[in-house]
Image (cartoon, rainbow, N blue to C red; front, side):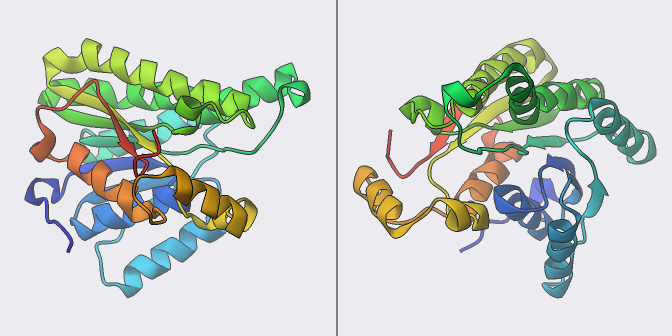
Length: 253
């Protein structure tokens, strides 16, 4: 059963990494709420496929803007243009990330900088871009996606896990700084989510069994499980929630 958040109707929502995976599901869920959705992604093909699927479902159409999140200047220009033309962003969802596996020995300085930029840097600068408008209307919700991998210390993607742990610190700092303006900031910490990417690269039957054995809930988590929580944290129904990290991991931690 889908929940309707009436306060999310016509709210301006900006989502990074909205073309595929968890981000795409978040985009679709906001469209179901009749929100005014803008999303960026580097994957044009996946983003156009999402737009087509949303249109087929006769939901409110989002606006897709191609953007490489490594280009901070372009990211901030896109957000500034939306605000200038439409008004303040009400909800910011920082979702774009990359969890490619690597060992400590494989990491050089260039790789470190690249992974930290993909998984952390743009979170800060996107928030910096929207917060001025949120302050003016004395309202706003920022949701940062982290990952359970840093909590578990999985050891096969150290730079990614480092960045995702920093997301929680960033979230708490933002929440304290912006709270006096009624701007809430929370992080969502997904567990093993069956996205197309995870299924294609890592979610083998053996690994799936390992995950299910470690979870309290014996079912495979889906992107919808994360998207539903993001909606709640973006809506006024969570008006008392800030500076928190919410796990969607089926009890693996």
